[in-house]
Length: 151
Image (cartoon, rainbow, N blue to C red):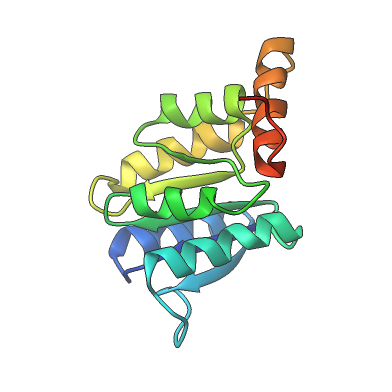
């Protein structure tokens, strides 16, 4: 799987994320502080990673900043992206299952190595729900992207 990864800082957990993804057999498309010479601002690098999803260049993305909040906000501005800030395995599983999230947002401050592995395990094991209500909600969000949702 091709995974776009961004981080606004070259932190140990960001480097560990890249190593972990490659170790799981994924191709990593690096952005921000993980790509020497690239713009490391969280809004810029998160948007660039999210565009990889929208363009079909990447299958999924992981965006990181100190809290994970800014990275998730910036990624969610890209139509077609459903970024979820996950601080544990349960939220990662739920984001994939109920929200069909295609971008994982992580906090560089709160995510330890062991927690990172748990979150990634849950993220990759998760699959979008086939439940009609869950699918209806995702479809509604897609319409919001297109500016057609009813108020």
